[in-house]
Amino acid sequence: MEALTLLSNKTIITIDGPAASGKSSVGRLLAKKLHFVFVSSGSYYRALAWSALQENIDVSKETNILTWLKKLHLETRINDGEAHPLINQVDPMNQLFEKKVNALVSPLAALPEVRNFLLNTLRNLALDHNLVMEGRDIGSVVFPETRWKFYLHASDDERIRRRTQEGEDDAILERDRIDSTRELAPLMIPEGATVIDTTHLGISEVTEKIFIHLYDRL
Image 1 (tube, one colour):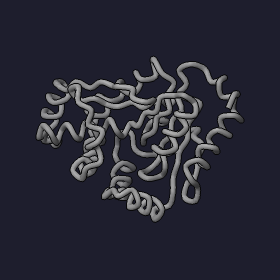
Image 2 (cartoon, one colour; image 1 turned 90 degrees about the vertical axis):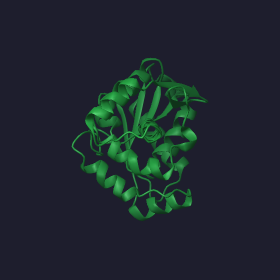
Image 3 (spheres, helix red, strand yellow; image 1 turned 135 degrees about the vertical axis):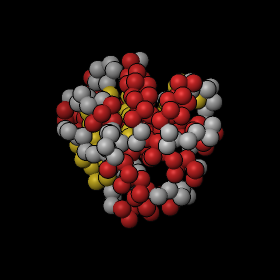
């Protein structure tokens, strides 16, 4: 652990992968051990999906999207080492996995206007914090220059089992299809990323693999 203090300020560790591959759980534990800020980029997209539902925004119309985003005030609150997106000073974290949000988040995330809106927000978090950020294009688009890139994956059956065990009703395979085939910032293995199959590994085991990699590259 002591060797990891050699990581410089403004260090960014990215963790990409499909739904239920372990990104959030591993990222949260890793950030806690390193005393970094944990960021789930998905929570920002989900917060926007929640807001669009609250405002009855027709996301199929570009003019509606642009008008809505122009009026929307997005900020970040760091709570217990984790970044929380606030929409117009409201923290919607407890509502981000509702069925309607699950259904809208991938179509919304495929829109260039939305991705451009969030890109600077996510990047600006690194100006003041060391980060562990997870998502689907973090190592490929948001922070492609970082040394520390990881990509987690697991079998479809295992990912579905995990989601069911969490009590979530989330069509993860369909979301993966949408996110992998979209033209803008598709889900992919970032160049230079270390790939870890988490199918038969626990959260602590995956985190330990990442620590070993960090040690080896210091």
